[in-house]
Picture 1 (cartoon, rainbow, N blue to C red):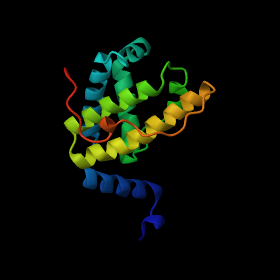
Picture 2: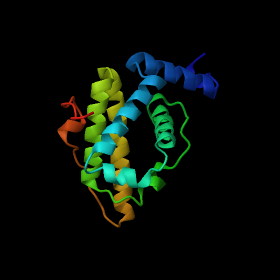
Picture 3: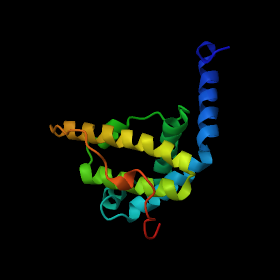
Length: 162
C-alpha cells in the first residue's frame, strides 16, 4: 500500500519514523533542547526581560513549546495553539528574532547530532521569518526578506553560562 492510500494516523506515524530515523530526533531530545534553550533565553539581556515579564508558569510554557517543536520537527500534531496571535503584541523586531535564532542555533548544535540540528534550524528559520513578517505587518511595516546572521546557521561557539 502506498503512503497516499494509508489512513492519516498511519501516514503520520510513518513520517515520524522516517524523520526520527534520519535525524535521531525524539521527544526526549526535543525536551532537552527546549529546556536548555529557555535557560539561555532567561539569562539573555535582550530576550530575557521580554520572556520573564510575560511567562508566569515556566513549566506550562516548556510543555507548550515541547508540543510545538514536536509538531514542527516530528509532525506529531501535538501542538494546538496560535503562535502568530501570541507574538503580535510583543515588543520585538529584527534584532530579537536574530538573537532568538542565534541562541536556538547554539543550543541545537550543542545538544543535537548534526542532522537533528540542521532539521531544527531549517524549521526555526522559517518560523522566525514568518513571525517577524507578521509582527512587522501588525505594526504597519513592510519588511523585505533578508539573510539571517551566519551564527544562526552553522555551529557557533557555546553561549557562556549555558
